[in-house]
Length: 279
Image (cartoon, rainbow, N blue to C red):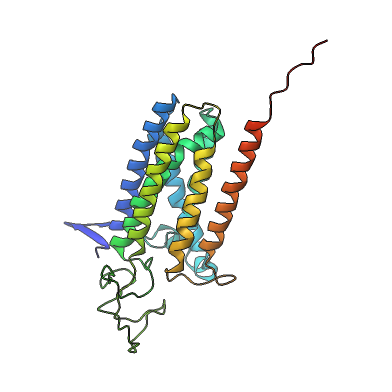
C-alpha cells in the first residue's frame, strides 16, 4: 500500500489525493446532469464548497469522538492529516449542498436526483484512497484468492493469515498480525460505480416524465443503504447495538427513508388534481 506519495520533499497523502479526484469526478458528472436537466448552476463551485465543508466536518467529528484528547490538543487534532470520518464528511457536505441548491433556486427533489449519480461515483473513488492508505477500513481475515494484506498501511497487516487458527500477535482491531483480509474498499468501489451507473440511467429515463422528481434519490437511499449494510458484515468495525455497527444502523434508516419517500411521492403523484366544481 502507498499511504504517501513522495515527490522530492513533498509528501502527498494518497487518501487525500483520491478524495480530491473523487470530488473532481463528481463535479463533472453533476455538471453533466445539470446540463441534461436544463439547470443553470455551477457544479464545480458547489462541489468545491461542499467538499471543503465535508472535510472540515469530518475532522471535527473525528476529534469529538475522543473528547479528552481533543480538550488537551484541539488544534493538533483538527489540523493533522489523520482522523477523517465518513459520517462527519457526509452530513457536512450534504448540508452545504442543500444550502447551495436552495440559493441556486433548484427544486429540492430535482436537485437531489441530479446529485446522486455524482455522489455515488465520488464516493467510489474516495474509497480507493482507503485502499491505498491502508487506513484500517478493510474487512475480516479471509483465505479467498483476492484477499490482501496491508504491511505498509496506516493500520498495517502483514503476511498470510492462518485459517487453522494459529495464534499470532493482534493489532488494536483484534486481527492477527499476519493475515490477508477482505479488500472491502474494492467491494465498495465496484458496488458504488454500479449504483452510480444505474442512477444515471434511471435519471435519463425519468426525464421523459417531468413530474417524476425524487425517484432517483429514493433509489440512491435504498441501494446505498443495502450495499453499505452488506459490506459492514465483513468489516472490522466494532458492533454497536443488536450486533450491528453504527453504519449498519444508519444503513437501515437510509433504506427506510428511501422507501417512505418513494411511497410519499407515489401517493402525491397519483392524487387526482382538484378541479373547480361547475355551478
